[in-house]
Amino acid sequence: MATGRTFKLNTGAEIPALGLGTWQSPEDQVHSAVLTALKCGYKLIDTAFVYGNEVAVGQGIKDSGVARESFFLTTKLWSTYHTRVAEGLEASLKNLGVDYLDLFLVHWPVCMNALGDDPLFPRREDGTRDLVPEDQWDFTKTWAEMQKLLDTGKVRAIGVSNMSIANFEKLLAAPTTTVIPAVNQVELHPYLPQEKLLAYCEAKGIHVTAYSPLGSTSAPLQEDPIIQEIAKKAGKTPAQVLISWAITRGTSAIPKSVTPTRIESNFHDFVLSDSDVAAITAIGKTTHKRMVSPAWGVTIFHED
Ligand SMILES: NC(=O)c1ccc[n+]([C@@H]2O[C@H](COP(=O)([O-])OP(=O)(O)OC[C@H]3O[C@@H](n4cnc5c(N)ncnc54)[C@H](OP(=O)(O)O)[C@@H]3O)[C@@H](O)[C@H]2O)c1
Image 1 (spheres, rainbow, N blue to C red):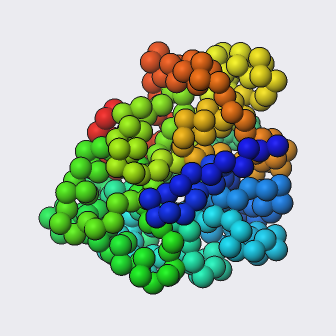
Image 2 (cartoon, rainbow, N blue to C red; image 1 turned 135 degrees about the horizontal axis):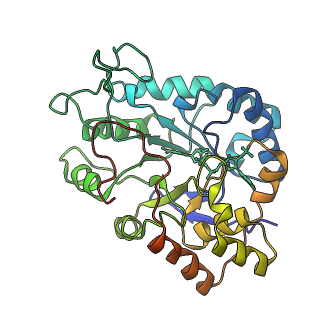
């Protein structure tokens, strides 16, 4: 059985500790993945406009028959929507077929040209990313627009993703910032334990969600000998250990799978001992590896 843990956000709402990720979940498989997850008790579904599967995620939600109020739904504003935040929200609500989101995140602190040569990944003629110059728009302006969404009742909480301490300092110092992000969703697993960023977010009252908790595509962290040893000792799968490590540290975790048996077994998180948590966290001292690092052309991960 899952522990059913939740974490309190700075809005007062609770975010479930364990959710289903949907990046790289093909449209034709994500519908049944969402159905399976909601059926076996998941209370959090994480998606994003750029995943191109919000419509199928929404259909899975609808077909599950699960009441909208009984689970937590997160999606993310894509970078070509930074200059038209309200439009980005409407597009996601329409795709998902819902009236509100529990959490709307700024996917990356990078603003791309809305009128470029591609609606999602515009590039300049020289092949570089078509970013809006910082003197015209930056993520502090995006955040000012995000704050306005709270009054619409269409988002219960707003947050960020892929935010470094340096970028937080800029965001929180901006005169337009009146709302502290509820969540920072970042890559977090034993090869990237994010201790500095976690301490910073905790001090500011920002909850952290661990993305790629299994090490992303093909779950490479499962093969780590320390994870395998702890899994064997606990009679758990390596994935359950990885997910439980993230949650026992106080971060929510959103493992992705489109495989029904894995969706089901990943849901069985458990409480790890302090010594196991410490042993797993120490893995990052010898193996440091970031799996998700798109070439944006600007520095995103200042602490690396
Ligand atoms: N905010 C962001 O910028 C951002 C970036 C990356 C990810 N995310 C979010 O975080 C979620 C999770 O991250 P992720 O998708 O990168 O990676 P992940 O959850 O760490 O790993 C997913 C991979 O693990 C496999 N897997 C899942 N459970 C398994 C199990 N029990 N045994 C063996 N293999 C298993 C999946 O395969 P199958 O699907 O084939 O079962 C898939 O290949 C994403 O889906 C997305 O929602 C957000």
